[in-house]
Picture 1: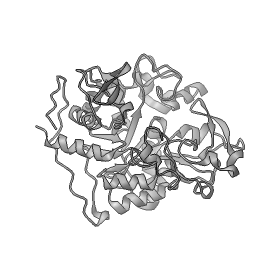
Picture 2: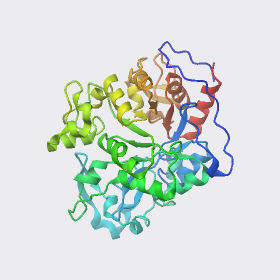
Picture 3: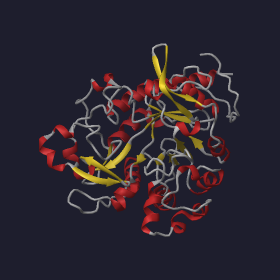
Picture 4: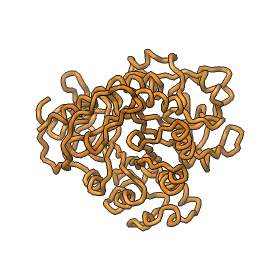
Length: 419
């Protein structure tokens, strides 16, 4: 791959080398530290090739060289954590075709948005295990869709066991923690009342999988990460790195009514009239203060980022568009048979440098290989997933979430070999 020259400020990293080969026995293998070489995080497994959040997707990711596999976690009716991107199941399973579950369909308000479908909290694990996974984007990923109907929904315990057997790390995300613990209701109207952060740590402890070099815990919410740092992890006697996920931080759209623009826990507590200073400490003192309209744009300034680093965060997981802003191309530009819907502006968000200066890892999401997710470089040069991942590594990202882990491994190899 040709050398990439950037007319941008580059965050200096230490010397990098390729990760050591995977050698048995698995229990003696340590995942490569993000402080020595960028890590490759298999986003929902090798979700570009197999239905997401299945053991098959995780296994393929491991074969392709991923350092960490990422399970998003939601609970069942009997409190078991399972790997699904959302608690609404019809997008990633065949539940809608099961007549025995037709009466489970409901409309619920999840993080302030009405969602209709079938929800994990209304199925016991034994029932959920009868469902089969399917590709959520069959038109975009027909190769993956060919595996529809073949795989179960795995439990978190099964994902931990797989990672332990193969000597890789896990990077679980607690989905909608405020909804599951406080706000959400089951089909019969009773509170769900499940603390998914506590359940996550309990399962890690039960499996003996608590090496901080092999686990990151991530969330789009802030309060549950603070609770993990202040209460749950100390009570469990373990210390694990916590990563603050960051949604859309475009100042022009962060006050839009969507959960991707604002941390939902802040919205919930502000609207309920809770003492935000008691929950969030000095973060409540950001410019303009915290309220139900506070967007990520206000939370990625150097002050809040430094506060996160001091109080709970080991890293941040920003949306890649935050770091490398782009403009839409209408119509998309066609180059060599590929369609590019956007072009990079050439800017780099100072968030990246601020996070690194605060000592935080930076793991942007999500690099994907399909045309829909690509962009031209600022000068009009086509970029593929490998060059995009390489660009992020070069700018100082210490890892990337990627749907095609083999491409991430190639990008890291190119980065390590670069001058």
